[in-house]
Length: 134
Image 1: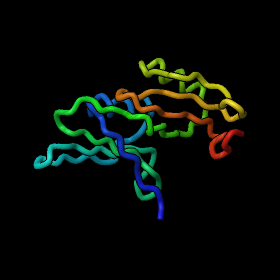
Image 2 (image 1 turned 90 degrees about the horizontal axis):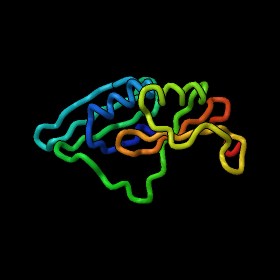
Image 3 (image 1 turned 135 degrees about the vertical axis):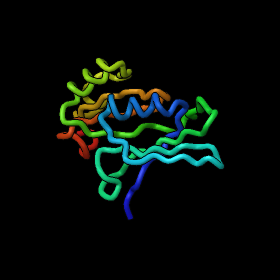
């Protein structure tokens, strides 16, 4: 078995596609519409779905926002240079909610960015990925 994708419901598909493609450099792998049930699916990632886990954006036509609840945490993305990545995100209008720095109680360098729908994305320096608190 392997992890295939994480699904996020979005209120403005084009705005979300722009963010994940232009700000986070993901590639749009495939997109489909279901006319009968009125939804669109878009799959994005850093590699082919056969090899990597991807993000599924689900747009339910006519729904422009969702309640996040208190169970959702974040998705995490590895980056080669967390400081340069955060500067790029800010320059493209992205919202950094936690500047790069060590995780509380550890040494792993992390940062957080918020997507257009308010989903949190943790950025982790490549050298620290998989190290826990470090």
